Amino acid sequence: PGFVQQLCQDFDLQCGRYGPIEKLTVDWTENTSSITIIFVSSLSAADCIAGMNNLTCDGRQLTASYDPTYLVTEKHASEARGLSLTEKQRRQREEVDRKHRAELEAAAKKGAKELKAEKEFQAFWKA
Image (cartoon, rainbow, N blue to C red; front, side, top):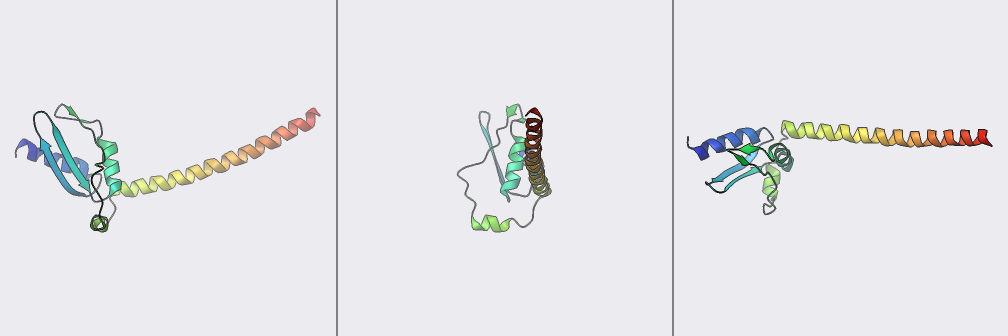
C-alpha cells in the first residue's frame, strides 16, 4: 500500500490498543500533517493522548490533543457498548487510588490525634 494507507494501518493498530476507534483519517503532506482519530469512548481518547503525545513519526513530533470542535452526540454515546481493557484497568486504578487516598486521610487523622495526645502528654510532664 501507499505511504498514507500504511500510516492509517499503523495508527489504527497503535491507537486501537487504547480502545475501539470509530473513525481515523490522515491528511499528510510534505509540510504539514494531521491525523484525526475518533474513539468510541472519551476514556480511550484520553489514554491515547497520554500514550502517543510527543512521540516521533517519520521524523515529525506528534502532538496528541482533543479536538474542541468535535461534539459527542447521543448517537456516539450510545455506540459505546463495552469498555476497552485500558478503560477497565483505568477504572480499577481509580478505585484503588480512591481507597488509598481514604486510607491516607484516615492515617493522617489518626496521626494528628496521636500527635495531639503526645503533645498533651509532654505538656503534662513539663507542668
